[in-house]
Amino acid sequence: MRTIPREVSILSKTQENVLIGTILGDGGLRFKGSECRLHIKHAAWQLPLVQYKHLIFENFVSMKIREFSQNIFGKNYRFAEFVSKTHPEFTRFYNMFYKNGKKIVPININKLLTDPIGLAVWFMDDGSAEYAGASLQTHCFTESEVKCLQLCLERNFKLETTKRRNKGNWVIYIPKNSLERWKELVGSRILKLFDYKLAPYSLRKKTNPVETARRVPFI
Image (cartoon, rainbow, N blue to C red; front, side):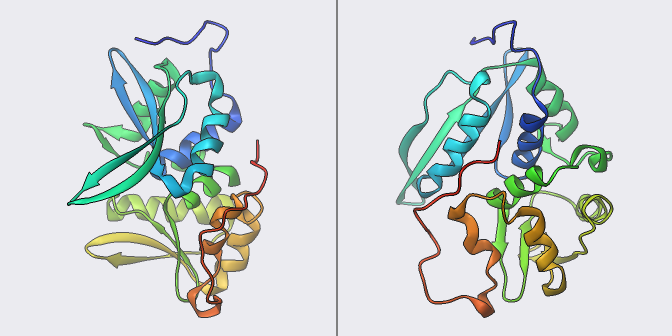
C-alpha cells in the first residue's frame, strides 16, 4: 500500500474545502486496507478539472493522471482519472460523508461547507445551467439531506434556493433572482471551461459550451 510521508500530516484548509466540494460532487473516497484514498474521475474533456484537483492534492498523490477509454452500453467514452495515496485524513472525511458505503450529507454540513471554493468545486462537478437559473444535481441524496444543504446555502452564503424532482431524484435549483448572488460566490472561482454553466439557456448564444481556455486555478 502506498503511504504518505510523515511530514504530510493533515489537509490544508484549501484542500479540505476542495475535498468537501468534490465529495458532494463526483469525487469518491474508498478504502484500501485500513485507510481511505481519494478517487477523481471525469470525462476527458474535463481534463483541466482533473489537473486542477491533482495540483491541489499533489502532496497526497504520486500517480500521474491517466487517460483511458471505457465501453459503456456499447459506446466508447474517454475519461481522465487519478487516485491519491491512502491517509487517515481521507478516512476522517469518509466517516463524515459516508454511511454503509453510501454518500450522505452530514448533519453538521453547515460547519463544513463554509467557503465558496467548496461551492465552486461542487458546481464544476455537478452543476448545470437551467432555462433561467442554474442547478446542483443532488441525485444521490435524500430529500431531507437536500433540505439540509439548502439550509446551509442560505445560512452560510445568503443564497436562496428551491428543490425540484428530476427523474425521481432531487435537484437544488438556483432561481433567476439568486443567480447574481451565485455568480458572486463561484464566478471567479470556477475554471473558464465551466463558465457556460452560469449562462441560462434563455440567454445563451448558439456557441459551443466546451471551451478550451481556462482560468488560473484558485489555490
